[in-house]
Every structure is written in C-alpha cells, then in structure tokens.
Image (cartoon, rainbow, N blue to C red; front, side, top):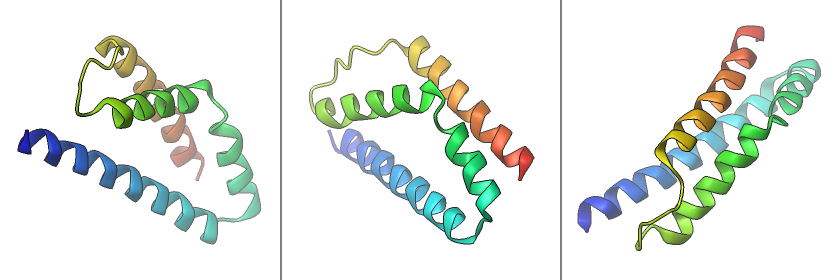
Length: 90
C-alpha cells in the first residue's frame, strides 16, 4: 500500500506541475499563441484524459478503474501529439 500511495501522490504532483506550467505559459505568451493553445486543447483527447484522471482519483484505493490500458495509451498519445503540435508552433 505505501508504494500505491507514493505513486498516487506522484500522479497528483505531476498534474499540479502541468497546471502550473500552463498558467506560466499563459502569463508570458502572446495572444495568438494563447489562442492557438486554447483551440488545440479542444481536442477530445483532453476531455477523455481528464475523465480517466477523475476515475483514478475517485477509485485509487480500490483499483478496478475500468479503463483498458490500450484506451489510456491511445488517448494520452493523442493528447501528447496535440501538445507537441503546440510546441512545434511556438
């Protein structure tokens, strides 16, 4: 159980870091770049990843998340590809 708690805490800290980086970006980026990013994150993968994160947060002590590994991998890969597109543009 301690390993599970440590992994869960790491998961939460990574989400917090991602949110901080987005805020930092939005504080320093120009309006066009922010608009490009805001449009890019409308990709369905962002909502789907958030749904899976919510499931993990709600059920982390129980397990049995009901999300097949392939679904997670394919969805997070799509989200990463969208973020890479933003990085290349910037």
